[in-house]
Length: 187
Image (cartoon, rainbow, N blue to C red; front, side, top):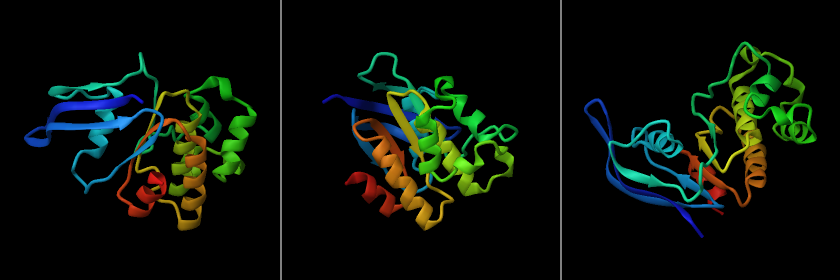
């Protein structure tokens, strides 16, 4: 089995060192959970793996040629002025009106919101739209940055179950502060 390998990376924002000669690896085809206290660079690490920012030193080696990433950002990054369907199909126009899209919306309990503007949704509904968008994109590596924030317990359990089923045998890097979420995805 291949791994994403992080080798001796260093990175800082302004005068704050986030990583100094950091090493790690994450297996391809499995879910890896990344846990650390706030401010330890979890989101920054995902950004570097996706190539959105570059380490000042070291390397990140991904054993997939031209990997495609899908990212559920902690700050959601939805287009508030468009509806749920447009936000999701923005990342993959091949899924418009597909059974796969319908089943994803249904599993995340947002099918009834499909044609509503994102600006009108609650925080938990927006989180599920962001998760749906990330899952419906074509990807080799799925990056999930605190994706279950803002969900009530029942919705969180249902959403985590769906994400785990949908991403079985895929490469997923999940950042969370929640020990229960980490345990669930580490099983």
